[in-house]
Image (cartoon, rainbow, N blue to C red; front, side, top):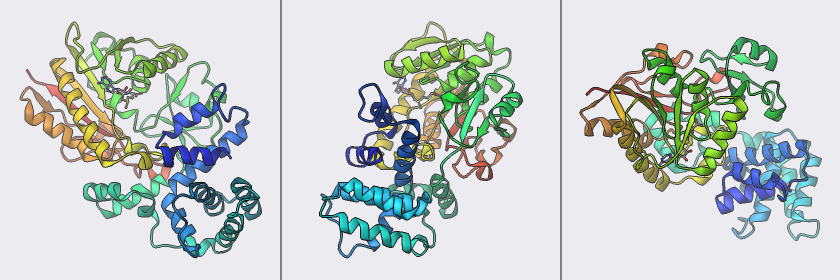
Length: 429
Ligand SMILES: C[S@@+](CC[C@H](N)C(=O)[O-])C[C@H]1O[C@@H](n2cnc3c(N)ncnc32)[C@H](O)[C@@H]1O
């Protein structure tokens, strides 16, 4: 079953789920023959198992007479997928059990064990799910500890609870949000983004192939909005650098507002995606393939966006593989890179210019600590505090110092948002 291969790729080989899916369904890929419905189900199944892994393993382990040997990964994954169906996806027990037994193989010596565990899972579902709060169970300990220190117990629980839910589809539109909301059956969020529930391939939705909108989480749209609102005159008159631009969600926002953007990124492959996205949207940018740390622009910029590479722990709602792929060492490695990128960008900023720094992370090392370090090392930069009015709908994300930290539990009643850190700085001299 495809979902088992996907789960194994993430958990056993630490591959990104999106990459695994893209390869599986590419021409010549292992699962290219799966139809749309089966593809959607395989993704949902693997994602649910990843989202709820702690809860699932606890429930399964509680039903085993003795621990399952670590080498039996196939059996373990099969049990996880069976449990995901029984505990969280409302799959009828006979279908979930039958599918899982077929997955381990009808001749497998573990067929009986799988059968028995799943039948008991189905029977005792409510009791097995009954725990004071499952949220911390589904979060690796090192992440839980860091969020606990940064946001406190109650907020960390809300964050982890938000990660357990399938997120809605958020869109940014080139123009006429109200009209597109009607046509797409979406709502206009107070942030200005459109939100659509209901799933299905986005390519089939009206306006996608005509390039009228692009998928972008409501929080991911905040940094470019803040940059645009910081410009004094017409965006078309400002020299703007999107310094970590690919795959281009924020470049598209800037270009759609009329800005002529230099869109720089170090990755040729990701820039190919950016070009394709801009082509579909019929938007333009000057694409530059370079490492920001060694690149020299002809003239300084009036506005620079540094949407830095990061651990992406703010995007676990949309990427439930992240907690299983990232390690504390990744935070340290990326924090060092972020410091270098910020320093390079600050050198490219004209006097009076604005620098917006963002990272889709919940880790303080990738957020406020970066800004504090930069400000303490340079006297030509100061914080330009972001006001509550700059982030309509996400007012509670504004921190006392004037930075923004959105959390997955913000806008919870509407389905949450990704976790983004955003800071605005100004070059004084
Ligand atoms: C978070 S992603 C940017 C997402 C993009 N801004 C958007 O909204 O679609 C970070 C990007 O930084 C790029 N990057 C990493 N190191 C870089 C470097 N040294 N110089 C320039 N870009 C870099 C990565 O290739 C990646 O595309």
